[in-house]
Amino acid sequence: MSTLHAHLDESGDLNFSPAGTKHYVFAAAWTYSPSNLAARLSHLRFQLLKDGHDLARFHATEDIALVRNRVTGIIRRYTGWHFTAAVIEKAKVRPEFYDPVRFYTHLASMPLRYALRRIRSDTKNVVIYSDHPASQLERKQRELINKAIRHAANSELPDGVHFVAYHHPSASNAWLQSVDYCCWAVYRKWETGDDEMYRLLASRLAAPEVDVYADETVRYY
Image 1 (cartoon, rainbow, N blue to C red):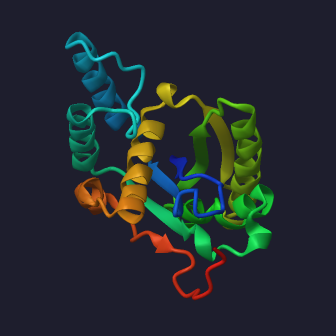
Image 2 (tube, helix red, strand yellow):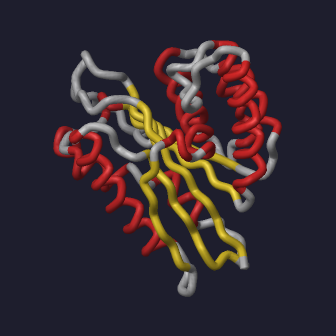
Image 3 (cartoon, rainbow, N blue to C red):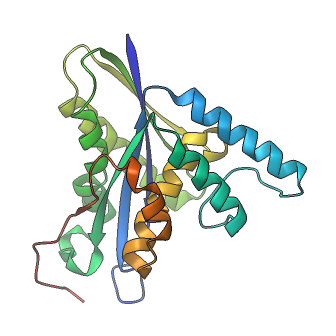
């Protein structure tokens, strides 16, 4: 009896104006064997702590280059997992989807759905993780993510496959830190043109990231 572990992350902001980020990215990373990579990252963190790096967790936007390179080196060499992402060019989002409820309901579960449609035939359980919210705004967003997760799982999983969704602090879960790196790599590629980390992690892509509004020509700002 196999258990799939799926981990979710997002990058960007919900400011739908030229002052906001150009893109929003949702990502999912999944594995049937979470312990091995988690142990390797835990070992790396203890090494770095010994060397004077004060790290409660790994986080791509906060980590210095030396740390990012070490983390990326570990997660790209571990083969027991995949990830994918959905990229939203925010200027192409119709104004009626600026409301977070509609935005998340419509788009947040796209990478998760991809993973759930491809589970192994012996899968009996699916555990879905996302980061624990810090602020009240993030808690509201997390409620929307949770609804999107449950809707995706209920609609995509075969009968007899049980699922549960957890919201944990990323410091408690090396895989939430790993999917953060994946999401950031895709985000950097699209937002700034910096594809260095994306190229390093590309071998773990189950499928190229989806440009959700690639066929749209109308921009709303």
